[in-house]
Image 1 (tube, helix red, strand yellow):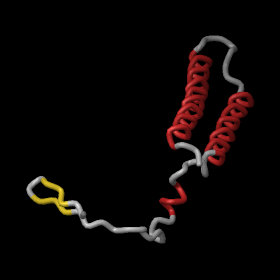
Image 2 (image 1 turned 45 degrees about the vertical axis):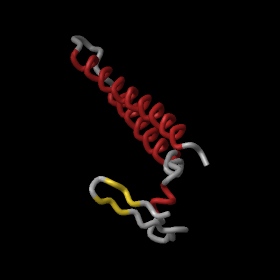
Image 3 (image 1 turned 180 degrees about the horizontal axis):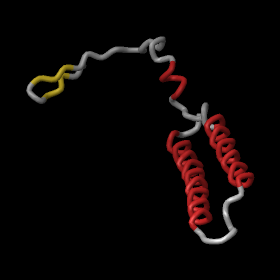
Image 4 (image 1 turned 135 degrees about the horizontal axis):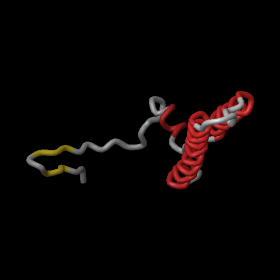
Length: 99
């Protein structure tokens, strides 16, 4: 099983790059719309890039769907039986541990 920190670092990197691509689209669109002259945004290019970002986002979600190591355990935790149960009590800020 993959270490949770490795998975989290990879997903952080992937989603950061994805958000930067979306911000690049927004910045490009805002720049092109606000400039004077005939350099307006062509709808075909804009919607192609938006479609690419949607496809990329869905692909990232599908690829990382089963990479979280703790997901199967969380989904089936109602069926998991404990190997051993400990009775730990707290009184006056002192823990009473079993011997």
